[in-house]
Image 1 (tube, helix red, strand yellow):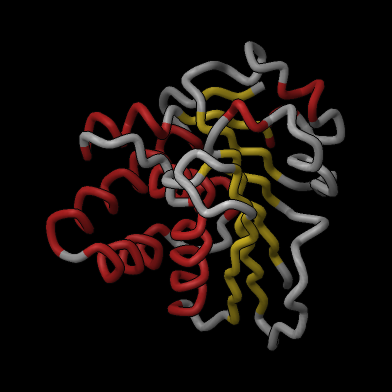
Image 2: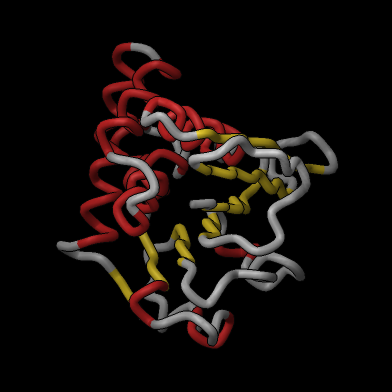
Length: 192
């Protein structure tokens, strides 16, 4: 069971941290996991790509993820850049940080190989601003990803978040993960 995720965002949005948290959550469930970033200039606002591979067997590949089962876009302005949706499998998921609907963003046209139910938007930045006072969408999107794919449990993800961020910030971010999961899988979710 290999599951590969590619995260796209901008420096300062927690793109690298998202892949690392996902790998820690998977590892705590007895899976093998590998997370690694790819970026050019190291500055806030520059495009950043981060990868996570999860498997129940040892992971030998250390190359970039070219055929992800999920693409998480933390900044919707990146959607039209070359390569963002390349290789996304037919049974994959596209998760976009946006308060707009998949229809408004024309996501079905960008990923026509996907069933509409596999294209989801979550207003993760809005959630983070309200809870943290900062526009850090990564933990809400990780919760949404966990809910959509089942690749890790919410409990494992929240434990990884609490371990990474400590007491107060860990609890707030763990709550954001749960809110992201709820929005992606029920309630006021937005799907194409």
